[in-house]
Image (cartoon, rainbow, N blue to C red; front, top):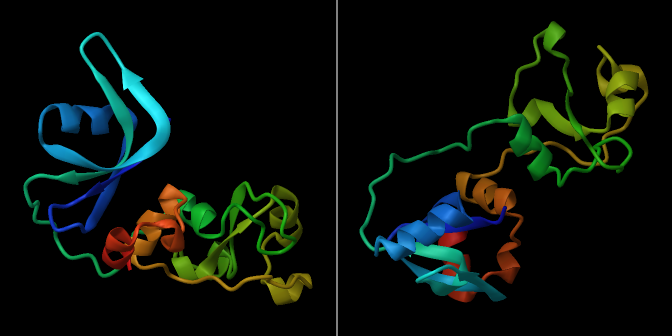
Length: 167
C-alpha cells in the first residue's frame, strides 16, 4: 500500500498515512493535495481524484518538539537502505555492533542492518573480534530525515517548496 506524506499547515512533515487515510482527509476537507502520483487515480461511485503523494492539513496541529528520531528495527533497516553493513547484500536483520550481552544498547549508533549470514557469523562478538569490517558507520538521523527515509524519498527529488521544509 502506498504511503502518503502528511504536512502540517506550515509545510512541516508530520507523518505518513495510508492511501485510504489520505483520501479520507481530503474528502473531509481536512487536508489538500499538494502533490499527486502521476497517472494514478482513485475511482469510486462518487469519487474520481488523483492519488495523493503529499497532503497538507488545512489547520495547524501543534506537535511536541522531537530532538531525536525514535529508534526502531524498521528504522535501522530503512536508514541503511536494507543493505548489510558487512557485505552489502540484502539485509533482513539488525545487528548490534557492541552485543547486548556486553552492554550494547538498542540505539542508532550501536545497530546496523545485516544479512542473516553475517549476523550469525559475527555472533556475540564485536566486528573487530570477528574479523569483520563495517562498510558504513551507523549514524542517528534527524526526525525529519527519518521520516523521509521511511518514505523512501530523496530530498533532491522533492519540489523546492517541500525540500526546504524537510531539511
